[in-house]
Length: 458
Image (cartoon, rainbow, N blue to C red; front, side):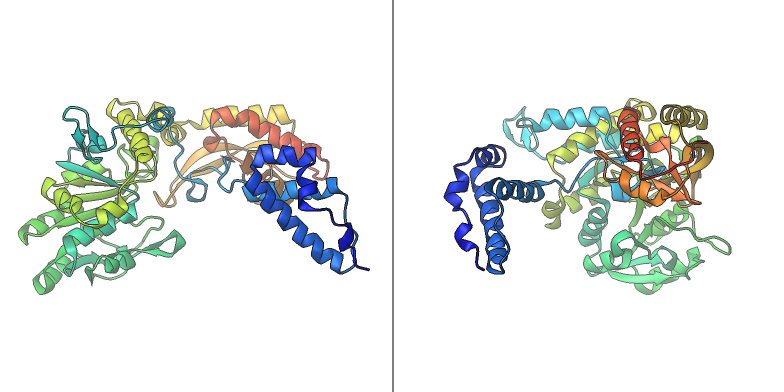
């Protein structure tokens, strides 16, 4: 039996109070599209003999369609994994000062490319230049959209159709299939590999320069380490070699550390300042890793090189926007004032003591009435300091269907991202921002109170 004759008209549906609410919430055009979408499905069902639902049911289903269409895919989460620079979760959270500056500069218009003194067009590159020069000691600085873009732009401007000499130990691939050799080739540079996978010597670079001439490039090892029978020349020795051959040394630091990580009990990560002091002509690094700011690619170094890079056509395609500059300059101000450890979230996390983590984990345990507080290790993440960890204390939860608990926590609002280790659910306070504790406890209580997950009280 064909039930199409029982299908209400679109116009009739639009006259209902329920449709009026949908139009008010989602707009008339989108609501109309959703009704048509639902009606098309009902026509197919009616043609096969299925009954037509009531008008209120049709509009309830229309609401579900609208909510699906408008649901955000970028949502805030609580990172309880203990991975400080979690690439999949957006890397570095911004400081309060950075957020305030983004709001201040984006609510209206701003002087992105306008000089108030002359009343004429200005340059966006000035906004972070003086801060970066003062912090790092560089002659000049430039900001683009990310560090891969910074490397691509530098090589395109300085090494197109030229040889770029790099150690085989640094021809890395990082997350998402991004490969350093591919970026080099895309720039038009000719890749010249030297040394072996585990060992490269200064003489390897010198022989390559004698045979090919070209630029020298150092690339950060990112998220892996070569251990055992290994060797690489120090940056200062490569800088001396570059001067001997009157060529350029580019150091892709990747992580962008401006503070000495060794002071926090982890392996020393070369800083931007050290790279410049060792003689690198140009240093490239990220804004959202150990610098703790927004996604950005930052270049600092010789003024003549930065000037040439600014003039390259790719500069416009890779330039940073006003929101990036607003967040970055506020972040850099914290370094300039010596407030980074106090103001920038990732440095608050790195600097936090195990005793602080133990206290917070015990507070969670007391409020929930379950779990065990045990020692564990947090990691830096973000392609920085591979295998380096920080001692912490975590709330460990065991019981039946613990994987279900992990999955259910991801459905909370906000979602809670944790990890399972040795059949235990692990919640690390190091990466949970203090103001998120209330939401974390609410999410856990809601999931546990559903009664489908049995945990050990301990």
